[in-house]
Image (tube, rainbow, N blue to C red; front, side, top):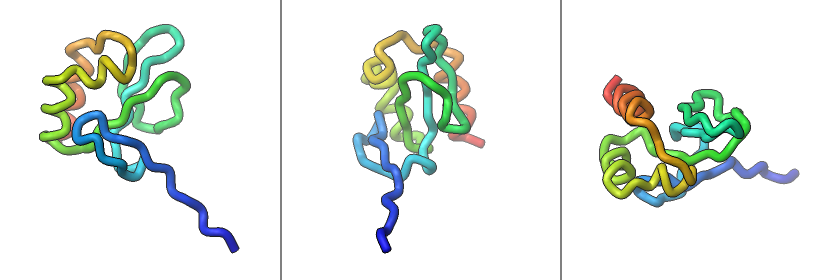
Length: 87
């Protein structure tokens, strides 16, 4: 019997591979809207970030979310991410 591999993604903050379901996904839809994807199933270009404040700060400072999504990320998305990390 084959053991199924669990999907991993790279964090835009720490650049480490972690399990997909442990991370927060930010997605740019085909319409160009950027949103936080709690389901991990929205269609579009996704970027993943660990639920750690250090990873968030690194990603924010070096604009790694923008680079991954190839679009400008609105301030409200950063605010919502920050709220999720502190809750």
